[in-house]
Each structure stands twice: as C-alpha cells, then as structure tokens.
Length: 250
Image (cartoon, rainbow, N blue to C red):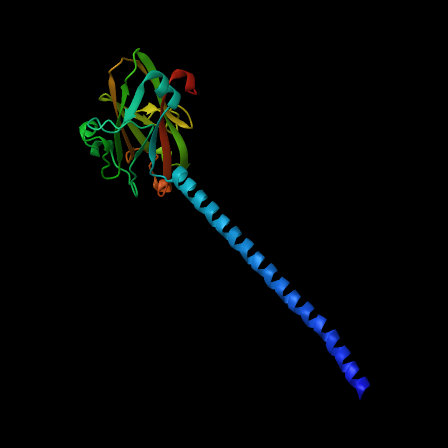
C-alpha cells in the first residue's frame, strides 16, 4: 500500500513538469502568434500606405484632363520673373494648374468664342474645349529673353492626331497641330515641334515691368481628316514650362 502511494506520488510529480511545459509551450505559441499578427498588421498598413502614394502619383501623372504650367525656379529667382493666374490678384506661384474637363468631344475651331483671350483669368473652359489664362511678369532690372514649351506627357489611342493647341501671347494667336498622314501641316496650323513636344518658342526682349498674357486653348478638331472613330476614348496629358535658354532642351 505504501509502495503504491509512493508510485502514485512519483507519477504525479512526473506529470507536473509536463503540465508546466505544456503551459509554457502554449504561452510561447500565443506570444509568437501575437507577434506574427502584429507584423502582419504593420505589413498590411505599409502596403496600404504604398498603394495610396502610388494612386496619388498616378492620378497626378496620368489624369488625362490636367494642364499644368511650371516656372523654372532658378530662372525666376535669378531674373525676377514671376507667374500668376489673375491680373487682379497677383498671387505668385511656381506651378499653375488648369481645371479639368470630365470628357471632350470633337468640335470645330469656329465654335470657340472669338474673344476667348479676353473672357477671364484662370480656367474658363467651355463646351468641349479647355481654356486657361495666366501671366508672366518681369520684376527684374534687365531686359531678357525667355523660352516657353508645351510637352506631351502621355497619349492614349492616338488622340494627338486631331488635337489642336492654340496659344495666345499678348493677343497673338498661333494654332499647333500634328502633321497629317502625308507629312504636311494641317490647314491654318503650325506643326508640332517634335514627337514629344508641341512647341518651343522664344519670347524676346521682355523689359522690366512688362507683363505677358498667355491663353492656352485645347480641343479636338472635328474637321481634321484623322478625327475618326478609333480616337474615341483617347486621352492626352501635357504641361508647359517657362525657363531661360540655359535650361531649355532642344
């Protein structure tokens, strides 16, 4: 009897460490699981943050309706050239952004108001065309020249075949278009400067105190022979740069 009790006690003593080991093992598993869940949460949050950043970058880069104007920092600082959207409120900016159109159907140049250059400052879009007016002012002390370019950032479904870009500089209008299939300029237009640039022009001899007024008008020309059904759903993004000769790329 005494022997049996001793054996039972020994068995119980052996079982206690096993139970303690099991409890310790369970605790370790829970701790590891908690750490894994924490790492997983951090990973998911990091991915979500990354995707958010990518989304906004793509929205900025590929939003088809955007038209942005950039004034070179060095050129502005070194020469006293400033840019603003309103002649009444000369709030100086290095970047200007025109408002977008949700969609754009083809129209004729004859449908664009004749006084579009004098309508208003900033964005003044109409039915199926984008219009934007802004100003460049010389606050420096010496006369100088500057260059302005409009770059093609993105084209989808070859919509550039029928795009028109009109630039009014101090009331003087120039309309730009891509060369036609035969390699000739479209009627009443100046050809795109290159495959990735609509224009590159020099503004000569702007004097201290001078203010240049720009109006940019963009539309799809319905009378263009290349304005055909395959272009439906196409998009095009472009931007404009104002800079000096040393920073211009030809």
